[in-house]
Image 1 (cartoon, rainbow, N blue to C red):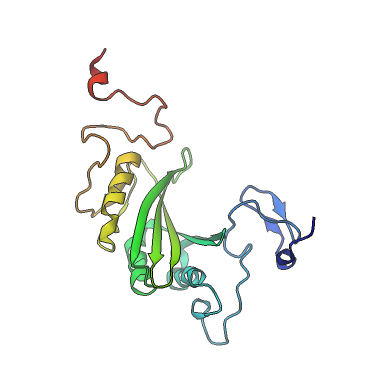
Image 2: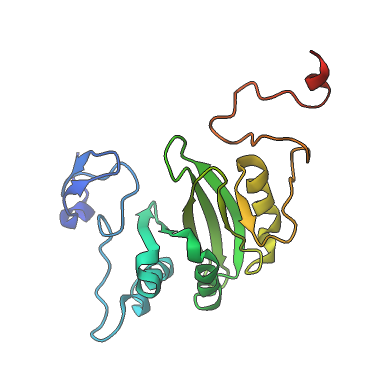
Length: 213
């Protein structure tokens, strides 16, 4: 097999599954920022986020690290997509920064991942879009505990209303400050969250089925 010339400068290390890789190997999955990212150097006296030789989403990720420092947990570049994981406490401030400074005017989806039995158990995932540059960008925020909560981004993007309600309904993550946080798919009196990993495959009885016994 002919080696990929792009691997010549790839630093040695380990991928997230613990598998070692080096100059003639390709990581099997997403890697943390710095593992496979080889950005062009910024001109002297210029921050890397303003280096126009880099793709726009890359610059966005760098800007988050420059402006929010310890609030940024991880930056991942995988399959030409950029994802930044941030601490949840300042999520609204971070989202306003992305909307107002980097022009991500649309939050086209809010979803979540259940990492059961790990803790923090959940990741809230935001998919953003800069329409002028046709650029997608992903933000993740970990939340955990018996009653997971995070601030709502509806004050930043009103279109996040229904998607946050869906996450609340199916995963049980509450969004503080949401203007109308209630179930959107399941009945209002339903007590469970069917997209959680500990939800039984057969479900729980609901409606007339609950009265059969």
